[in-house]
Image 1 (tube, helix red, strand yellow):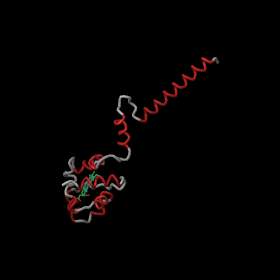
Image 2 (cartoon, protein in one colour):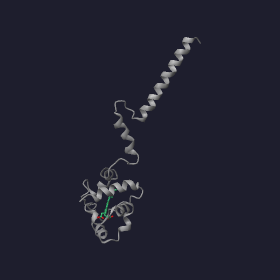
Image 3 (cartoon, protein in one colour):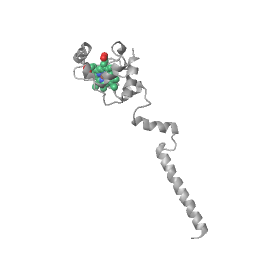
Image 4 (spheres, helix red, strand yellow):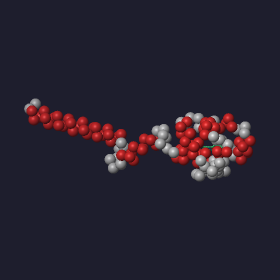
Length: 143
Ligand code: HEC
C-alpha cells in the first residue's frame, strides 16, 4: 500500500466508526432525529417503573378509573374514592391496596359487597410500594 492508500483507508475507518457511534446514540435517545432530547428521554420512563409519575397519573395507569370512574367519584362498579382520610391514614391505605381482602369484615365493606356484587377490588401487592404511596397521597387529598 502507498502512503496515500493508508491515509484514505484510515479516513474511511474513522467515518465508519463515527457512523456507528451516531447510530448507537440514535437508539439511546430515540430513533427519530427530529425528536427533541427531552421528549425522547421521557419515553423509556413510560414503560419502566413509573418513577416520575404522579399519584393521579398512576391511578390512571393502574386502571383504577376503569372501576372507580374517571374522576374517582364512583360508578356502579365501585365506590367513590373521596373522603377516605376519615377511614385511612397513608400506611393503612397502602396496606389496603396491597391486600383488600384483609378489610372485608368491616361493615363498610359488607355494604360494598352487596352493592358491587360481582366486582372485586384487585390486590396491588405486586406494585411498587412507592407508587402505591403516591396513589395513597393522591387519594387522601380527594374530598
Ligand atoms: C375491577 C374493578 C376495580 C379496580 C380496577 C379498582 N378497584 Fe378499588 N374497589 C373496587 C370495588 C368493587 C371496591 C369495593 C370493595 C369490594 O367490594 O371489594 C373497591 C374499593 C376500593 C377502596 C376502598 C374504598 C373505601 O371506601 O374504603 C379503595 C381505597 C380503592 N378501591 C382504591 C383503588 C385504587 C387506588 C385502584 C387502582 C390502583 C383501584 N381501586 C382499582 C373495584 C376496583
